[in-house]
Length: 352
Image 1 (cartoon, rainbow, N blue to C red):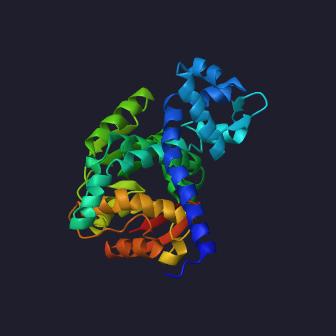
Image 2: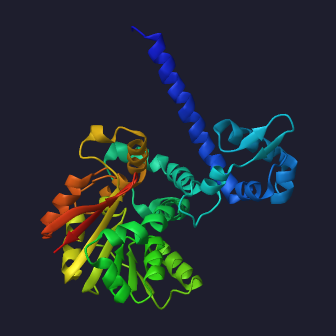
Image 3: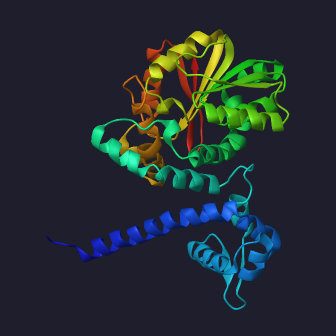
């Protein structure tokens, strides 16, 4: 073997960064769950024992946690006096689950998804699927906490206004079906923003629907939201003025059947809003940090879930616009366009 020492050193350096990030993910989840970030954000510059006292945790664990966080740039450190603190930017990204950016949710999703490694490894050998409901419960909570900030930041301010005539209907009072709603983050955001509209959240995962019902009740939205256990391919109750799918179509084993059912359930002048992870048409378009995140999640969650269902599709989280357009067209929709985008999402509008 002819080893290029410089290239090997570069690759090992990449490995060091990746391994540190993998182990740091668990520490982010711990910091979120124990309130360590929130206590740092509100407490100023603290020594380890002071943070431990504020959070009723063990000082030696907190000390080691803080050192790792400082090494990763998630916490600031003054070695002269031994204090740690969060910058405004770090606090913004690490402490508010209802804000427009919340990183711990993504780490919770990743850590929980990795618990399915034995099942996923076995599926590699057999080609079988791994159903959504077979994952650790943290996947469902983490998924909601991962996606909610992006929806909260963009859904009512940018995505819905980008659709032709939809926002006016919602303000006046529209019937909305939110397919693959999970724990109902997107459903409740729409219900809050458009009180004259009725929004029905639908998902095949019964425990997530139960969580969505409970959270909607806690937020006083029972009269404006309804949650049902239902498959995308067979849900009914139309005609709906708006049907939405958020980061869900690519997870389905038969997305064409789902799209055909959406077509049947829409009003004649209705709209289907399809939100999917940002992806280019070609693999090479996605060989970047965002693409790496989505391909990695997709290997553990999206492709296995689709292969666990009937239909023969397994689009994956980086399907891209052309694949989504083909599915929509095959289902009978005649109009399709990219309505909006962010660094993490593409938003499509489909009309009958």
